[in-house]
Image (cartoon, rainbow, N blue to C red; front, side, top):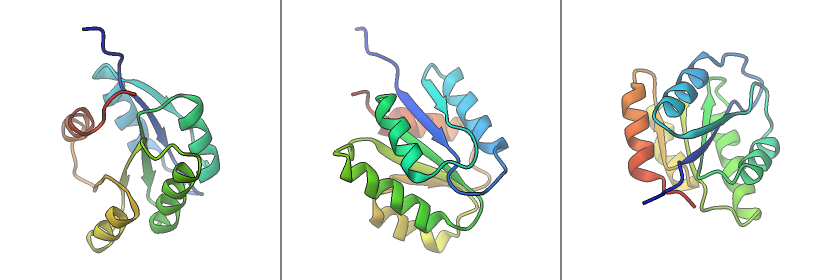
Length: 133
């Protein structure tokens, strides 16, 4: 069985300048055999969606620490739908209040990892919930 590896775009939307967590997750996914594209800091939702489509991504992982998660996650999901790419799984992590997680789920965010989530948990979730195109 020659199943191609999962392709994941890891992105830092918005003006938040802290990307250590995103880099740790990107490395963990790569070490687990996935193809990972890290877009770098200060990406707009439009740039992230464009990268996901160009890279034929199976998933997009967003890291948001700035407090703008409701707007940024919603915009990425909305743009993926507009580009007929809503089969790309959107998940995220960062400083996100528990109370906002159900609302993000309603918007189409598959899951949110809060501080304390381990890289093993994240890798296992991606393997279980994302399938290759």
